[in-house]
Amino acid sequence: MIKRIFDWLKQPLGLIAVGIAFLALFSVAAYGLYTTQQAPAQPIQFPHQTHVAFGIQCLYCHPNAAKGPTAGIPAQAKCWACHQQIAKTQTSVLLAPLKDAVLSGTPIEWVPVAIVPDFVQFNHRAHIAAGKNCEECHGDMSKVTIAQNPQVMNMGWCLDCHVKNAGEDHVKLVKLTDCGTCHY
Amino acid sequence: MIRPEEIKLSSEENGKWGMVIDQDICTGCQACVAACAMENNISFVGEEDSGYGRAMHWIRIERFWEGEYPEVKMTPRQPMLCQQCGHATCEPVCPAFATVHSQAEQLNLQVYNRCVGTRYCANNCPYQVRAFNWRDYQRPEPLSNQLNPDVTVRRMGVMEKCTFCIQRIHKAQDQAKAEGREVQDGEFTTACAQACPASAIVFGRVDNPESLVSQLAHKGHGVKHLEELGTLPNVTYFKGG
Image 1 (cartoon, rainbow over the protein chains, first blue to last red):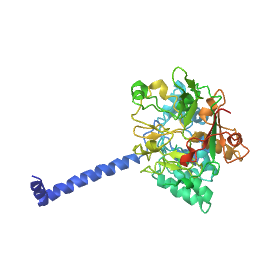
Image 2: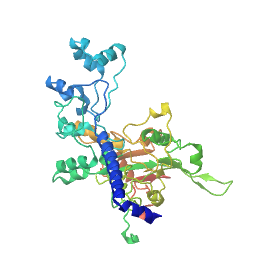
Image 3: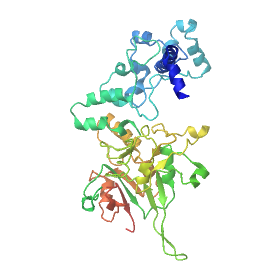
């Protein structure tokens, strides 16, 4: 029985069938990986590049990055502080969800883009204090609309930078490559 | 395999973080057990699994007694938690290197994302302080809101144990670094020590001779459990002092 299947697979038609099956599996896997790297849909098509072009600093909207573990996503009150003085806010279709949210008092449900799994304890403050700039991990926000990840945020990527940053300092290297520094 | 003459006692070698537990003033109120479960997102396994011996605690109050009935005498209660051994028996047996020694903090770590659930570490622990997630225990809606965001929520098939509240250690270190100073003794403590109404648990740096915990640990009549196995435990117990 098994020999008959192998014989059938060895003939040209069988080889083509194997090829098609392999290609199908490969493309499904590739598509699956591709979707994990796409920025998620947001309630508002927030244009980062416009805001950066106006000269607004990252830390104006995400001030907690310099103070605590999470950078935070600003509340609509912060958006409204500027936007209520801008005439376009009243007319723009893209800004209608912001106006609705402020008038009805319901929070905008932003979708976090740069996320790490639950078993990773990331602290923004330590990274900013170590002299990292936002764009080194999050990419150049003057070029994107909705924030997207410029690279795959995996452990190898974290450790590459940790090892490079420690340099010759052995104590620092031990601390920065210790499992318990990020996983607990 | 260590030969008996190679076994080091903790008096010769100290870790970094340590604890002192005074059994004479422990009332066995279980406040530490409850505080630990709240701080570290420990699952409530329920009655049935508890009956199978699958209850999950990172700290438990052990009670022992002496003599035959009816002349039974309780001995002081003994809070038992991971002793954060300097030479731990759980570490070398892990096939996935999920339980490793932290060189930076001198603690025994459990890396949940590496753990494959062989349970070899728990079987090899002489203190029996490791807990295994036999199921994904559910937390119905209001309970899920009390999870500590600084601690991983463990899933089924993962071993877990006391971490000496490493999230608090990191938080204190981060705070101190932001303010440009060193972490001071007594600035923070573990959840169990914080909750203890009798202050029977003291936590701190044992490598700093100035700290309260190392002064207590060197008072003389302290005992380290199963020290003769060469595990170099970092928890000192006082009894009958």
